[in-house]
Length: 285
Image (cartoon, rainbow, N blue to C red; front, side):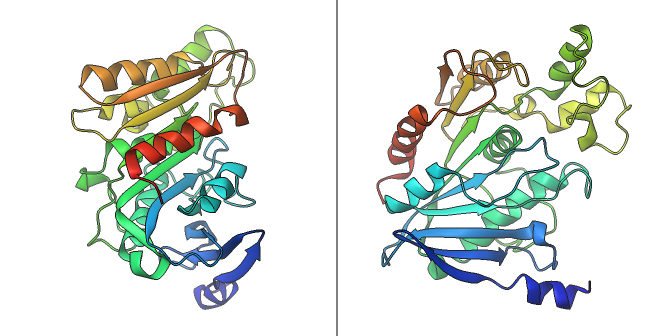
């Protein structure tokens, strides 16, 4: 299918769901690629400028979708925030750092179009689960890294965000893969999704540091809220504990909620904590 036909297929669509106005499939980069689209959710009839909260879905960087949205996305929009849910390229299509470049392009697009979508461009938060949590963390930690911006979309805008919620995302890919090998984890056996981020999955393990949030921590980072289950066998709790320690050691505002008896998931009982975190750091809509 040509780029022109793809652009026609991917034309934004306005729909309504209970109490919300929704615009689906908005291109955030002029590539004609459905991986470069996002959905926006706003409270029905609300024309006020409000902080933006962008959600990044999980799926081991190789599956998942921006829609249907997480329930918390809908809840935050109903409270008056402008919410966005984005797609990004999977590892079957593009290698790292394409996934980060896509997320940054989405932030820059939303900041550039603040007046069109009612966004307070100075107050942008991001959150994600699993692989999406990893990408949210990387966004938060690399807002001033020009070498990681990529070439998609509006290059004049900043991709920096003002608050980050990382739900059970991996933070040290090198240590995560090595721990699976040492523990003889038969679920992976060399097919770790973390290694698939790179062209040569047999390359030295130090290449995994290039996509590990732990190694991008520095002072003056945005506030972080980490949420992780203590029975997560896919991405162990220690991954969030390591990032928490590094963030605090660098003098950053960071906290960790440990979900007791929970595996690789986010329990709805912790939605209020996420909402409170964004209220504190982005303001009330």
